[in-house]
Amino acid sequence: EVQLVESGGGLVKPGGSLRLSCAASGFTFSGYSMNWVRQAPGKGLEWVSIIDSSGSYKFYAGSLSGRFTISRDNAKNSLFLQMNSLTTEDTAVYFCAKSQRGESPDFWGQGTLVTVSS
Amino acid sequence: DIQMTQSPSSLSASVGDRVTITCRASQDIRNDLGWYQQKPGKAPKRLIYAASSLQSGVPSRFSGSGSGTEFTLTISSLQPEDFATYYCLQHNSFPRTFGGGTKVEIK
Image 1 (cartoon, chains in turn yellow, brown):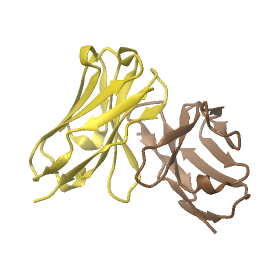
Image 2 (image 1 turned 180 degrees about the horizontal axis):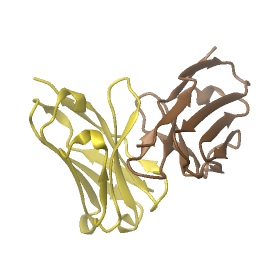
Image 3 (image 1 turned 90 degrees about the horizontal axis):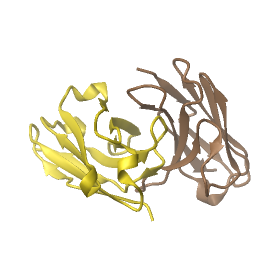
Image 4 (image 1 turned 135 degrees about the vertical axis):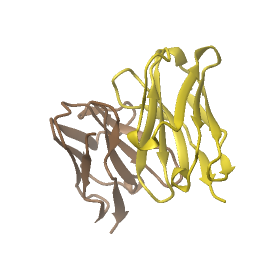
């Protein structure tokens, strides 16, 4: 059974940092690109970032202004999102999702909530 | 960035109704589009990939069509479990972009 389990969310003050993790199981993790997508409370879906299967290529939403860094550890079947200089606008549920190269994400985790507030 | 304009933003429909949701891309994205269903507090679930291919396990009342800049998700006979919010996503270029969503509510 495919599983993606996000963790690392929580309450952080503006200007702070947080590192999200996504633990994958039930599929060949090293064969898939991985995405982060977020959803602010009561809002729509916003694509955040993608990393290819080997970790060689990474793309980000332009709105992030270089504050977020995606990475992965294929030996540990894990995906990460390092988030720095957080603002209240980053408050959202963050989902990880897997995708075949060049395809739309086909399976999503349940998400982890990040709240940025003083 | 490619803009995805989804319409309507919400609709009210009855069980058994035929429902159509549209996404328009700001430039040609070939058939690089997926449709997702999301229920409150849950992760999105992919219904359609490559604009018109039905995801395994998804009921056949869901269908997708279109290519280039105009895309449609159709639910042929709305069922109680279909009341949810639907999103399109283009994966033709980076950054990936979602439509604004369509909330399907009970009439």
